[in-house]
Image 1 (cartoon, helix red, strand yellow):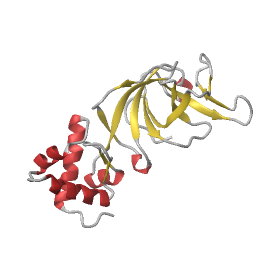
Image 2 (image 1 turned 120 degrees about the vertical axis):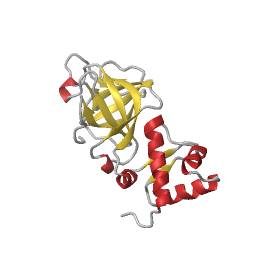
Image 3 (image 1 turned 90 degrees about the horizontal axis):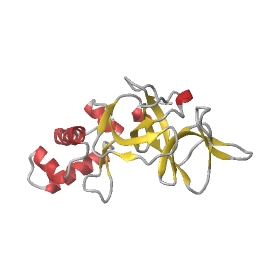
Image 4 (image 1 turned 90 degrees about the vertical axis):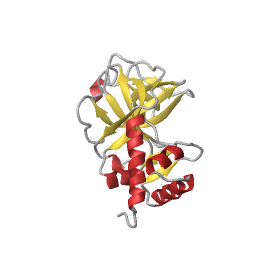
Length: 212
């Protein structure tokens, strides 16, 4: 529960939200100062510190625009989460991801119970159709450090990305990436394979379904 949240703090939170929604990236200190009509960056710094203390936003160190609105911040504003749309990956043979900067989508659902960074990717290919991921679908990905057998993951293979099901067994080949279409071969783990995140929701059109 938020206590001692001033009207000025909430106004700045709203400015941050609207700037991200309208431009695709967080505002700078100068842009927040202009939006709030204050004369110094110190005033903005103090307000941001308070918003961080209330766990409404997070500021990434070393980035002039490194502001992230946290789930509680969206709750206070009564707005849907803004999730970055990073580009295109594949559910076929691995391809280089197409990075799209400055594009965000407003999504509803259960994002408030996710921890870590989340982002959207558009999927090309049909290797995961039996898992409900059709060509042209959008998937919601959460970055992770720990993965469990059977999860659908975003994998990096020698700098190229793909969506597959992660399999871990106690017999050879032990670790591999499994397509959900018999036309495609499994991908065995090597030093060039790494896992970047988990697919937590699939959007084939319309409203985002519940998290998987």
